[in-house]
Structure formats: C-alpha cells, structure tokens
Amino acid sequence: METGVAAMVRELPGGCTVPGGLERGLVQVYTGDGKGKTTAALGLALRAAGHRFRVMVIQFAKGASYTGELFALERLYPEVRIFQFGRDCRRASAIRQGLARCDGCAECFLREGEATDEDRSLARNALDLAYGVASRGSADMLILDEISLAAHFGLISVDDIVKMIDDRKPHVELVLTGRKMPEEVLDRADLITEMRQVRHPFERGVGARRGIEY
Image (cartoon, rainbow, N blue to C red):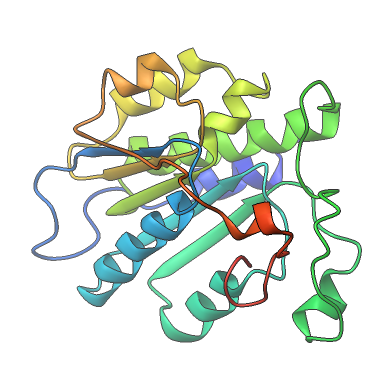
C-alpha cells in the first residue's frame, strides 16, 4: 500500500516554481555546537518567501508542534511549507496556548542509543519527501533541518543524503542544518557556517523561553 509520503512525493510538481527564480541553486550548511542553526535557516526562508520563492522546510527528528516558527509561517507566508518528522510533546497543546511551558524534559529529542523503529521510519519518510522535492525541483529552497542529527543517530544513511544532493535540480537551493555534519556533505557544500558556543543561558540555569528557544 502506498504511504502518505509516497503519495505526496508522487504528486509533487516539477520544474522551477517562480518566474525569475534561481538559475543555479547552491548547497548551504549550518553546523556546529552553538545555538542558531535553525534560526539562520529560517531567516533564509523568510528572505526567499519575500521574493515569493516556494520554500519547503523538512525537520528531521523534530516534532514539537508548539514552536513559534510553525505558527508564524502558517499565518504570514503561505509560500513556506513546513513538515515535521519527529517526536512531539505530550503537553504540546497546553504549551501552544501558553498554559504550560517547556521544562526541558527532552522527551521530544533523541538521545544517543535510544532510537526506535518509529524514529527510523519517520526519518526515512522525511528523506523520501526531501529527495522527491529536490529531484523534481518542486521548491526553490529546500531546508533540511537537523538532517545531520538523523544521520549521526543512524536513522538515515549518509550515502542517501549525498545522493539527494547530487540528484537535485540545478535551481534548488539546498540548506542543511545540524551538529556533526558528515564530511561527505561538507565536501559538497558551497557555503559552510559553523556556530560556536561561547556562552549560553542554559549554563546559568535559564530554561527554554517561549518565543526565544521555541
């Protein structure tokens, strides 16, 4: 039976979606241990959406449905579509409404050696969707958030990421984020920015804040 992701990929349009869009798309990487990788990528999405580029954001190993970018993009930029493939939070509804806050329990995040079959299935679906978008050219900018984390935890293979990069349509701007970005990906990148943590409020016991960390 065809999965939901397979049906979605089959129905993706091909070709450049915006008149006057990019003739040549590059590969951008935001990596390192510092905060700001996803924020930088979403800043690019904002800029591209301002020019009415079609933007797709696929988040690997992220499913917290209370993050502010989800609501902002939904309200302000219909050109930007965002898909999450990861664990959600049991208190997501209350956090969305401001009735609770993230307490850093990290149940929505993967830890080393704790990946499940469900985590692997979600990551595989995310990669299948990403490959379909890249190879068909059905977005002008494709952001793959935390894709390196999925590879690091063995949810997807580095070879499959490389194949997606190599098989993408020439006009697709590809943006990959996450710590421990594989060398094979770095070798194919046109731009690499490494976020280095110098100081973080978490070190002083300041927890995640609504509208700032999520």
